[in-house]
Amino acid sequence: MSAQTPAQGDLALLQDPVAQRLLGSTIPARLAYTWNDGTPRVIPIAFHWTGEEIVMGTPPDAPKVDALRANPKVALTIDSNEMPYKVLLVRGTTTVEEIDGIVPEYALASIRYLGEEQGTAWNAQIAAMSPRMTRLAVRPEWVGILDFETRFPSALAKRMGG
Image (cartoon, rainbow, N blue to C red; front, side, top):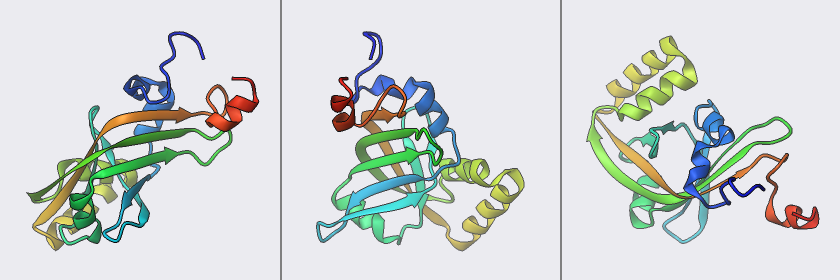
């Protein structure tokens, strides 16, 4: 790692080309959080990167909403399926806000994931099913990147002499 390359944990990694590709991809984020009984949970979820927050939308009565209100600390990963794997790791605190209508970032994510026509149709269907949504926003507090070319998991990097 060169002197100008941000270290794992540095928020500047969000500007790295690997992070930018993954944040703009149609790969679901994997959201890890703590359930009400203290056990871990992880779910795939569509997201939208605002440049400051990773935003997700969900129905107000989704079970994860209460769990995230009780314990808002989360981890997210967005990772590719092709070798060499590209992985964006994010830790942060979730803000949970119930809003009228569809979460704007959810609508943008739907169009990114499904395309203009299907995304717009999906958003209309969601809006008709529920007059309110919950906006889940994670502001990154720690960021890591694994690219399996120059950045490896720490235990492997140590064995490689890095």
